[in-house]
Image (cartoon, rainbow, N blue to C red; front, side, top):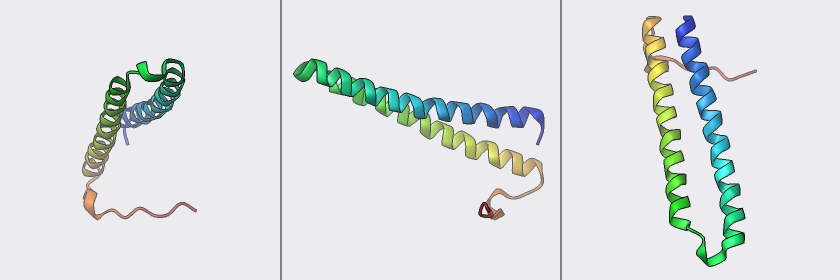
Length: 88
């Protein structure tokens, strides 16, 4: 794998971790504000923000799959024919 491909995989992994953290932080913020505001809490806005984060997460999965296929194809392998071995 070339340096560019490695950097792309690392950047994608960092983005996934950042999105996971963002989801946790949004949930924590939502709980705190819901507690403080009660009935005035903007649930729709928080639901929309959550859906946006989910869409970004789906983008990361799709992009990871696309990147993996390109790396395998560059190495002369067919993406659908590779079996992953279990970690030991």
